[in-house]
Structure formats: C-alpha cells, structure tokens
Length: 365
Ligand SMILES: [Zn+2]
Image 1: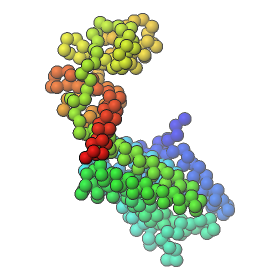
Image 2: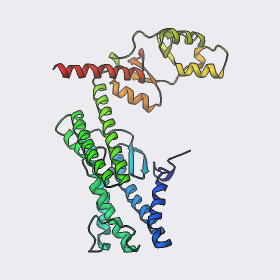
Image 3: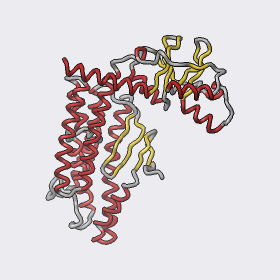
Image 4: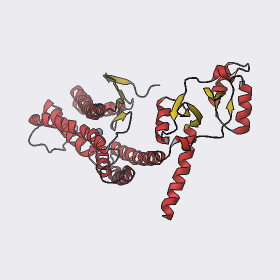
C-alpha cells in the first residue's frame, strides 16, 4: 500500500500527502459537526486551507533551494506539518540561512494579506474552536492566526525546525560546521524536551509527536554531520582495499561462491590484465544462482556500467557518488590505472575506525 500518494506536481516537485492526514481531516470534521453540515464543511475547509499554507511554506524553501542550485525532489505533508526534501546539503551557511528563512517569510506574507479581514477583537494566536459559530470571517481569522503560529513555531531554535537551521547557519559563520551542528542540535533537543513536557501535561497529542520527531531528527542530524566531517578528512586513495582478490572473465560463479565463503570478500573486480572489465558482487552471484542453475561465466553476470571514482576523492564524496547511482560499490582509479574497489560497507567500517581514533585523540589532547 502506498502511504504517501502524490496529490500535486509543481514543475519537477511532487507533493505527497501521508495517508494519516485523512485522520486529521476526519477529526476536524467531527469536532465541528456540532454545527451540522456547515460545521463539517468549515472544519474540512479550514484544515485544507491551513495545509495549503503549509505547502506554500515548503514551496518557499524549495524555490529558494532550487535558485541556489539544490533541486527539491518532493514535499511530504504529515498531520504534524510539512517537510521539503533537498537532494543535496546547502554548500554554505549563507545558502542554508536563505533556504531556511524563505518558509516562514511565506507565512508572514500570507498573514499580512489576511490582516484586513481579521476582526479587531481577536488576539493574534486565537485559533478558532467549535464553541464559535462557523463564519467566513472566523475562517479568515483562523487562517491568519494559524500563519502567525506557523511563523512562531518554525522559528523556535529547535533543529530541524527552520529556527534551528537558521541558528546552525548563523553559528557556522563564526565556528566550524561540526560544532555549529552540535550546539544547534543539543539546543534543539532541549527545546524538544520542554515542548514535549508541556504538551503531555496539557494533553496536546500532535505537539507531543512533533516534539519526539524534533528530538530524534536532531540526534540523527548530529550523527550525519559528524560522519561527513570525519569522512571529508580522508581520501579514498588511502582507504580502498589493496589486498582484494580479483577474477578473470573466464571464472565461473562456482569459483566466486568458493571465494566468498573462504575470504568473506563480497565484491570482486573482473580483470583482463591490468584492465577492469566489470564488478561482480555477492548479490549478483546469488541472483544468478537463483535464476540460472548452470555454472555461468562471471563475464555474463558482472556489472559493466559500474561507478568510477578518482583516488583523490574524499570518502564523503565517494559515499555520495555511490548512493546517487543507487549502487553499493565503486572502482578507484589513478588516472587510467585501476587501483581497487571500495564499497559503502567499507566506508562505514572506515568511519567507525576514524571516529574511534578521533575520539581518543580528543580524550588525550
Ligand atoms: Zn520550514
């Protein structure tokens, strides 16, 4: 079952809605149903318009990101808000700042447009509840308040909310990106704990879920940034497998099975002299065994269209290049000379070692 069907496509950005969003619609229709059919229409209309504002907010991020050379794959709508998925991380703190600020700015503009229709008696954060009669004026006032709340909420310095990204970008202009991320995510987790506690005490379920989401996202962003900052310090030329066994095109799958079982090496270069013809992975062999019971030549099952990387590339760049090709392994070259293979698993293992060395260095320094 597709939990996130695409509801709209704007140029190359697909806008997807999580199916649980329908529960929120049903819930709003139900609480407004005390006013009959008009109430139900009001509840659904308010929710749809509110989420249109959320989509516009995410499009604000997406369009600025694209203008800065970072295409946006998709925007996902969850009952707790929206997320715009960038295909790359912003290159500079300035770019991250501009992308982060664009979203809340859209809501400021929407709120300003609604301002003339807002009754003077209502306070700025006066979101309508079913105790009021459903009128057009209430709808506009409710949307105005919602946009103000979206701005205030998103500007909380709680990574990965926009405010947290703005904080990290501002810090990264004066200290290293890694330290900026550490501070921003720790502050974000602190804010998430405060929001979580308040929301549990006041019985606000959606807010409590959002607080949990913030807490865990901040933690995983910190891990990812640390991984990136460590992997950019090493070049793949110093971290590929020099000792790897290789195959000749005339070898058969049975020999690869033997080699996998006796060496635990999962990926093999198929070589003719000093030239690499292709790569055979454990997955290729298993697939070949499952579909063709005969003992095939490795030349028939190898991947000839493999990822090639220069030995000067950093492990972080290699990791991104392999992932972008939806592959698992790359061949490392010095000019035209083939050096060896490196896989995502190798890079993860290298990361564990570099991380250990780095932590011990900081303990003894
Ligand atoms: Zn945002």
